[in-house]
Image (cartoon, rainbow, N blue to C red; front, side):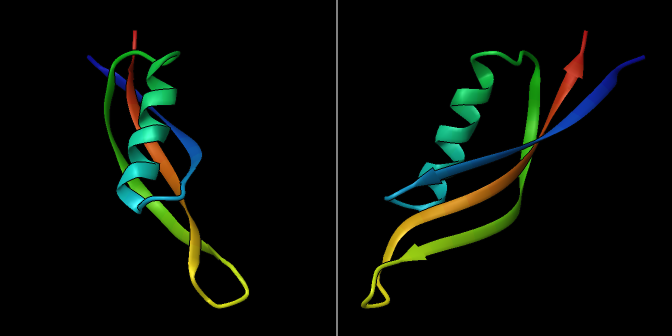
Length: 67
């Protein structure tokens, strides 16, 4: 029998949503083993005074197997 756990992670990037997800997963994988997948729970943006996006932020739920 396998048991999975879900943790919530916030990550950001000035480039894109995809880059924010990749950097969040890379950071988590340095301490969590057996990552099976993730889903984006929430997406946010930070803007400057002109309404241009300066940062992408994602809230991820990461699933991994418990050993």
